[in-house]
Amino acid sequence: MRILIVSQYFWPESFTINHLASTLRDQGHDIVVVTGKPNYPDGKIFEGYRSSGINKEIYDRDIELFRVPLRPRGKSGALNLLRNYFSFVWSGIRWFPFLLKGYEFDAILVFAGSPNVAIPALPLKWIKKAHLALWILDLWPESLAATGFIRNRFILRLVAVLVKWTYYCADTILVQSKAFLVPVSCLTSPDKVVYYANSVDISKHDEKNDSSVPSELLEVLKSHFCIVFTGNIGTAQSIDTLVNAASYLKDLSNVRIVLVGSGSMSNWVNEKKDKLKLNNLIVAGRFPMSAMPIIFEHSAGLVATLKNEEIFSCTIPGKIQSYLAAGRPIIAAINGEGARIVTESGAGLTCTAEDSLSLANCVRILYAMSEEDRIQMGVLGKRYFLQNFEIKQQASRLVEILEQRIKVDHSIQC
Image (cartoon, rainbow, N blue to C red; front, side, top):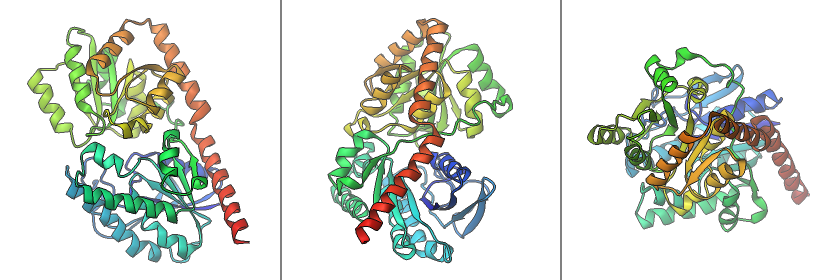
């Protein structure tokens, strides 16, 4: 199958779509990617790139990759975020048809972290006469309102209209959580909507390299009982819950809460750490994906947090799959689908979102467990991942979904 991937985010930014593209290629499909200039999560264009101009690259040996101009996200603020989103739309509409002239595709897969990504894919659908599939990772505009990025009701209504329009134009809508099925089906034809979960590539989990992790951090991980958070340090992740939990755990001298990542709240965390004298809170910074296996291996547990908003109870944070795949115990201060998976798998402990005291108590329970019990949690989590989220199976399922949906299109046309 010839598949075009449209995504505002792509390598060297760390997203599932990178691994999915490679896996689809390994399974014999022709993959082309169109994207923007890398700037997530810090909001600055990555070294070696500039916001203007067109780039053509080869990703992972032979995947053609085109990058269009993009205004970076900046440090924070709704205005910067909107400018970032609309710059991708403008650049995509202007450049994608030109860059892809002469290419033919059976399907276009939109990695829709936000609804704007679908807009430049719509002309391509009609020009290329290709099946358009949107992979929905968040519910919009609910996510914008829940994070507080946008509070203006008029803008939120406009976003809702945009979402409904893109759903109408799509041929297939893939949702990353079963809890998305009902709300998305309310905005479009229900027979378009298919559950399709996130995944991660675990092929390099056995390639552990201590040199990719600073010796100071590695020493902390090896010598202390470390509960590790990885990923975006932002508003949606309820980082203050982790900071407050660290304050409740000061009496456990061997316990450390380690934040691996970066984002809009990184500076705030450092300020609170100094103000509250939280020596048990380590702000490690961001590392490449290649460093994650060794960090996971030396973690006593892995923690996921989200804000206590109804919208986030429908979401499965992408890190949950990574944590399950790592085979380490999980502590989840989240509601809904994410908590259900941790409980159902037997991989760890859960508590209500934004409940810092309960999160601290979960750490205490894990700390008091035997090493054998903690190992068993990890084993159960890894088994659940392989049964439900393994990326080769997911890539094959994606192709099956697209082929079935394309047949439906053809039967309707006939």
